[in-house]
Amino acid sequence: MKKTIFFLTLLTLIVSSCTTKSKSKYELGSRNNKERFKSGYFETLATDDYPSTTIIRKNNLQIEIYETGIDTFSIKWEGLFKYKLKQINPKNNLDNQEYTMQIKEIGGFKYQFVGSMGKSNFEVNGTVIKVANLKDSLEFEKSLR
Image (tube, helix red, strand yellow):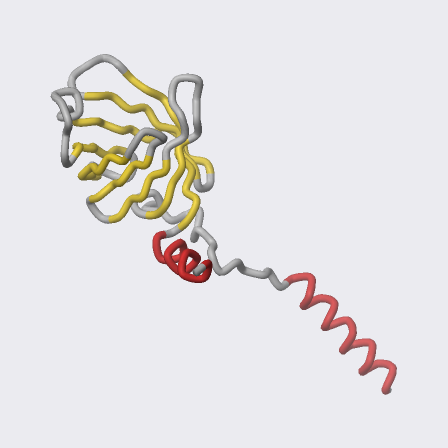
């Protein structure tokens, strides 16, 4: 009887340790969350034409940090897969144009987009990756201090 109880206890411990998932404190949330790209910290992938950009997005505000500076945009979502950006403090007429961003493909915590400026036919393609939620990244930054 003691051997049976010992064996069942051991078996229970082994099975429970195999099926328990450890969760990171800084998970990005559910991949099924349709609004997961509306706020958080993001990175664009660098291409031959454009360097990587850090994006901080919350509510109707988007801040983009480049190698050469920082731009702030108002963001207006027109659904889950389309949004428009308008620079808050434009430096010239070109910066005064509205950008239309269309999400074309989603894979986990990244998306492919096509962006256009104003009424021009010029389009840019790119990839954006969500690297952290706003709340989690602020907690992470505090833990580093």
